[in-house]
Length: 95
Image (cartoon, rainbow, N blue to C red):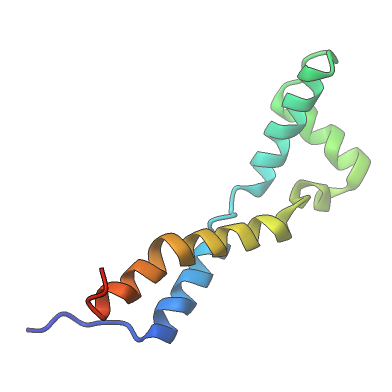
């Protein structure tokens, strides 16, 4: 049987969805970055729970999603460029 192929639109939509979903760990990234910034400023070390409480106290729970929009855009761009475009080019025997 011949291998099923996605249309260009299906490839693009799959890449967009995959890229957007690759940001599932944003709250953990915010916690990590906050801890790193504190360390470079010479502030006392905090564990992950203390850092979490600090962010929530200052910015609410939405503070854990700081920078999510640019990260989604970056994830979509990277997925489209590194996965989707090569798959489309392979369909047309360009690469």
